[in-house]
Length: 367
Ligand code: NAD
Ligand code: TYD
Image: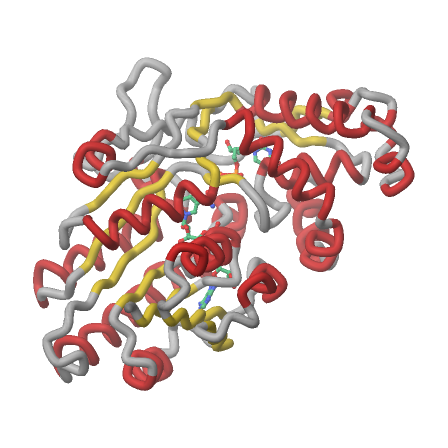
């Protein structure tokens, strides 16, 4: 039985991870620590809130004393670190928060873990693990003909977000090498699925169609991302925890490269199909005029490109497959349909998180 501290568990991937983990390991204790920034939403943890082994703590990873107390009090043996500022566009307009949370916040967790697990030996020799959730964006960008990123690809981050994640990966590595903290790192490609904050491409497109708002395509729309269903990311982390070698990085990806414009057109098509099925959706979303007319793609609008926009990401997950037996289970075909349907059925969730502040922020970017 594990006692797990999950940081950032009220965010997109953290919440999906906690839900997944309880389906597989209901006997484990999970303590979620989350600062509930604009991206954190307690409603994303509704499905587990009554689980007897679930605890939520509202707090900041920068608060090292709090982390130490939590590690001691709950006899935590596994820390899974999701908490981060995660949106590239926000890192371009306001990098400071990214350095604070992603670099200093990760260091605060490492310091606390070292103190309680190594210096105080609180677990009396029982195994501990610090798992750091990172991204493929640390590797920089690929041309169309480059081979996909492996764990040996040199780090070359291009956005302040990616640079802050790369820094945090280096700190995790250093705590393993220097102090012997038992760490692992996973570098994952773009996730999609339920509970994804609607400032990221896929949920933004779905919710904008429902409001009949433009679908902004940065630059020529031919940038490529490698999309993975979020539950497959959770499965990958589970394998790294159970079978991964301490001190190692593991790539997690979907073998699923798509140009942005093609993803957007696909989501438009799926939305049109859903609206064509009957009267219910047009009645629920009367403002979605383009979808009702079967022409969501008419909302596509090319806008100025993101600064320093990475052209292509692609993950080579051969090490994770060969060492840990990892394979994504969800096909893109089924995953994207499930995702569209989830947003159509969970208006209450996304309306609650779209309290206006992020829309104001997005409008600012396109003035
Ligand atoms: P998210 O922005 O949806 O969620 C981040 C969560 O962290 C939120 O709940 C937020 O409240 C919390 N948080 C932020 N600052 C905090 C602080 N100082 N203290 C405590 N909690 C804080 O992010 P996400 O998409 O779920 O990403 C989770 C992790 O996975 C991140 O580390 C990200 O870099 C990594 N990642 C994301 C993707 C992706 O496609 N979204 C891909 C690969 C890796
Ligand atoms: P995003 O979801 O922000 O993820 P990331 O930047 O971490 O890959 O963006 C995915 C891709 O979609 C990226 O190439 C930027 C592009 N994009 C748009 O073209 N328009 C948008 O409105 C957004 C949010 C993203």
